[in-house]
Length: 374
Image 1 (spheres, helix red, strand yellow):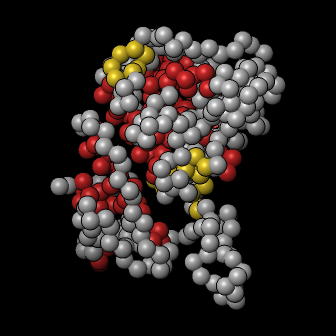
Image 2 (cartoon, helix red, strand yellow):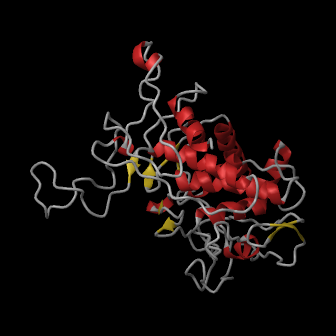
Image 3 (cartoon, helix red, strand yellow):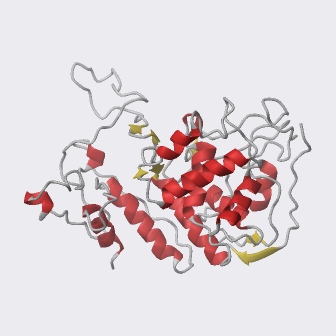
């Protein structure tokens, strides 16, 4: 059902990216993704009513590694291609549709941002409403030596990945399963050519090239608009759905009526419900520990800020507050400064603060400010 997708590696290029590759000056017309969901939905990361996906953008939160990767992709690509004007929210919307931010099929993102055990689409063999695309990578990326499959959180087909794949995090690999590499590769794809992605027409044109489906374009732009309005939140890596944390490999200790050899009581559907706990553990020495706001409304006002303060240990009593490892320096100003802001947002979330999007100076915002102020 259709000719194999091919991309010319001789496409002219412009400014250099951190790993020495460049943004193509001519728009890539071959799609990045040709996958669809297992039940006929628009893409693997989306099942059911697409309008519901847009409406619930805030409750289907973004893992911290993915959020940092999307924000970094925006800054790096706009430094390399100043005419593109790409927003990270557009990259994030594609990540939501393609793989639910790296969580499709039971996957989670590890602390390095790699999807585990790995996201592979169905064989592109001309069946199940797919194109017939015979193997182009000798199974290097998709473990299939007969047919191509879309790979990774952004669901690149191998022939397109060979052109736009980039080492975004300095680990000397171009890995489509790594959200850092995949997000920047998506930015490279969208910014190829001369479209201005601050305009609706530019966005629609670029996203349609990414996946040749009008319903796909409408869904992606709907989610992008929700993210642009602040309708999102960050959650720790390893979270497989809103409020659901992947189980630890071993129990912290036996529970009531449970012997040492009985294993953990929690399973993959264990819901972590925030509740009052000890104050947050000390954060990394690279930044001062934010001081919670105990005055004003929290102390004796109308109580609007209750729940904004730190809970510690992700709201679970007795657990220490995890800290975020530093992201690699890019050597590009102001990229590293913005990465510090992204890290502060993630770290304040891990510290237990909850952002009140209706306020601009709540304890969450104060926490971010303390982490980002020299």
